[in-house]
Amino acid sequence: MQHLSPEIAEKWSGLLRPDVRLDAEIGSDNAVGRLGGSPALPAAAEWPVWDGHGPLSFIASIDCARLPTAALDIDLPAAGTLLFFYFDGQLDDGDALVLAQDRESWAGARVLYVAADEEVADRGAPAGLKPYPVVPLTARVEMTATEPWHPSARAAFAPGAPLGNRYDHPVCSQEFLEALWEFDDEVGHQIGGHAHSVQNPVEIEIAEAVLDGEVSWEDPRLSEEASNWVLLAQFDSEDAADMTWGDAGALYWLIRPEDLAERRFERAMFTWQCS
Image 1 (cartoon, rainbow, N blue to C red):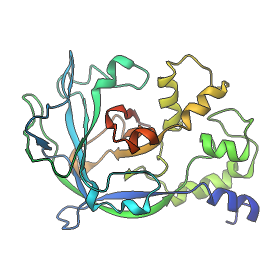
Image 2: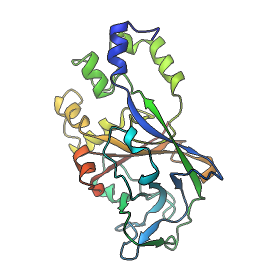
Image 3: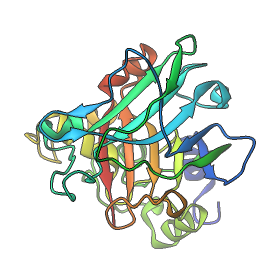
């Protein structure tokens, strides 16, 4: 890397993580999932609802058996389907927001896992919800970098630096940051890897929410909690699916590795960011 010394470059490369990038490809025969449409649910499964507000919109379906899961460093199921739901404001014109810092809104985003041996059928959207157009998603494995102020990078290069801020180190130099942005300048859709946060690292947002916002950014408990979460999935705004999250923002679902290993997808946490 031209902006870093060999020693620092080696340490930075060690922080890279593989992800499955999901590309929207209309008409593809190699889809591993899709945005929009109707979810395939078991007959006994209830459509996710945010009590007091209404049913959630269906966002995406991912077929785990078609993902190159062996290339990832998170323990995804080898088969079965992940279904993502979100209260997108269709029913109340955007009045109620799903926010990580608002515990009462956590029911406004949900991940359902349907095992491969379950009998399923397409389920139409509840009254008042308009399904998003179907957009097939294809998969490719790539490596993801994170922001230098992400807790993992901060721990590697400047443990005493303020959390979530630039610090005096070559990985925070303007030249290196511009090279990073040129390498990966869009959020996109993905499974696993480092999240492409629109604002501050999404892991910090989740940690603040879990800790009820009661610890400062200087408190080591916040960075420790942030390190307990990995990205499960992110879904960007997508013109082809008529999906726009805020001001061209993105939806993020994170999960603790131990919950992922035990398939406790109901414990996944959600946040969204926009510019």
